[in-house]
Image (cartoon, rainbow, N blue to C red; front, side, top):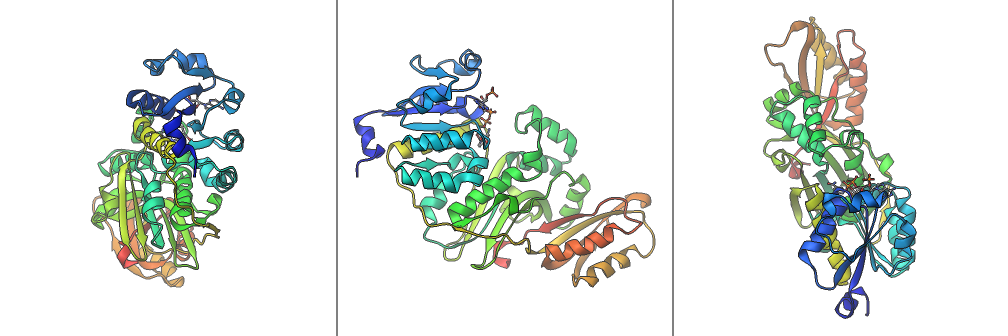
Length: 430
Ligand SMILES: NC(=O)c1ccc[n+]([C@@H]2O[C@H](COP(=O)([O-])OP(=O)(O)OC[C@H]3O[C@@H](n4cnc5c(N)ncnc54)[C@H](OP(=O)(O)O)[C@@H]3O)[C@@H](O)[C@H]2O)c1
């Protein structure tokens, strides 16, 4: 069948780039440096385009590129492929829909748009015989989406767990090495890893969007992102890393989904991960995704989850796949509700004014909901008037443990809100 694949041998694939920021400018440079046969960057769109055109990032780009700050120029142009590196839901959803309607292929790095509106846009693309590809939207430079689309569709993926946010991984792995949360967040912001407003990263919304895209592509499960619970990393303290180490674990932001064919469980939050797990070995801005298939078992993907160049590699690889007509498998997706009822061992950290009877009161509250204590850990050397100590439980549902924690939080000796974290078990133990 004649499509853009075969077209590439006859004519150039013309590319319009939306956005000339971190990712967009890296994409332009990669295309300029690599000079891929049959692919030509013809237009760059951004607001305030003179500022972009005059910036150092524009140096070295070929002189035939048309720079514009009018989106209508791009949508009405002869571009075969629109690459979107701007981000956000609006007006991007409308612009990309119009590009697809106009018969243009779309490559995007926009995880929020794909998580919330990917189903509708994919449908539109199918109806108009064009491609919508978004491999850069999950794990930046780690080609996890193409791998699951091309390499794992023959399996039945039952679980995915991932470190999907490089900013959180940077913060938590620096805290593991002794840094204070606020200092390391400031460092991440100065280094350009974290936004001035870090909410999407540290409160889990960014990882949640990526988890929903993975669920769709690897498990054919459509989720409403807003239904997936998120837990912030803001309440994790240095003391938690000390206690985690005593338990042969460290702490990472983990995004998880499990399906047993009937119930779908999903969540994003700081999680204790055993030192023996690949999640503990992931440092800095790295991403790591582990899929568990019913037939093929565990597969691990790891690498640079963000940054201009790694993400540009993913975008340009998508572009080349589109230009060469490489087909991807597209199995029907089922929309599913999300259960919060993960069964896992849990870590509970309390800060108390040390008084006799506290441990038995906590044990009583846990027994009341049927949760069994696995261990009680108290490091020496903390002041008695603000004593942090930890209780771990045997596997039980997070919702159940939360009920006990709500009761415990009201005890007069509690000096702050207890911290409740799941402990990740190795997949084969689940
Ligand atoms: N950075 C990463 O490591 C990474 C990794 C994976 C995916 N992504 C995704 O890639 C996309 C771009 O990220 P980025 O880091 O490159 O962001 P960025 O550096 O902020 O670049 C965005 C660009 O879009 C322009 N822009 C924003 N709103 C616009 C509008 N309404 N009209 C016209 N131009 C507009 C900005 O112009 P101004 O300069 O005027 O603001 C800027 O040049 C996002 O969807 C992001 O989630 C990024």
